[in-house]
Length: 216
Length: 127
View 1 (cartoon, rainbow over the protein chains, first blue to last red):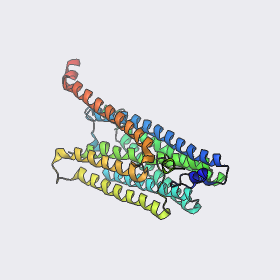
View 2: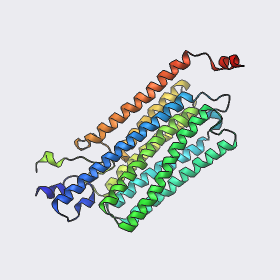
View 3: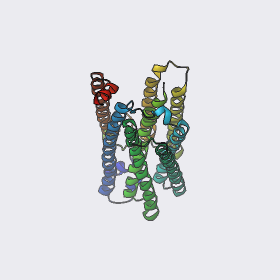
View 4: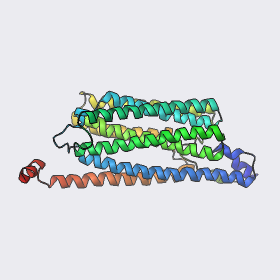
């Protein structure tokens, strides 16, 4: 009785745990999902701490333009707004996709994750275009300490997005090949946490780097 | 099994509300709406001339923190419920480290710059 309540309790955590396995196995899968999510959450927090070091570096060096262009001369707020919309909506569709995976709705999962991928790729394309235009205007990372810090901070976020896109493709292929197995669903959980966290970092990024650079 | 034993930990990102799909999707939809609103206000405030200039960076920081809160509640779905204590404690520790790092760096570097000769004077002396 107790093990059954553990499965069908008030928290439908991890539908994989509902498979008709032995009592202990079901309970074990549930706690494994908890442990995996918690461990990955701690990794993400350490990633946020690393980003905060880059943010502190940027904030210290923001006025060190060495006579070169400042953010106000360089940034294109329309492009930044478009990037923000792409990443925000992709975070939303990633959430929809994880609901689709939990309810085993293949069409919902694949379409939402495809939209997530396309929007993430659009974000990355816009960022690469921005970097290319900065370098073409002679405002590459070697121009001033401000631009070094800018390229490090924004580029590090862009690398995370690139890794996330590769991870997303891998997850879609794994769901396609192996189905909604408990271990695959755990990996999907980690991916959606990663993607939402990247969006949180982008919020800090567009506020501190772009909008504050524009503010008088 | 008693009631207290049923309350177990949850994972960030999990929908522990036992609702149907539309109900869970609406959580994300509310989050998206609030995030779009806050983003829009941020972009408006950054370029407006209606607000006293020096207050704009502070407004941007406040809006950014509010939006991060929206993301944590509606997208990561961390709540203050008893089943989320571990995740929230980890988050609190992370926030503490981030604040120490940011505030400490800015404080030290501001004082360092404050007590240093202006950069153009140093450049002139090197010539």
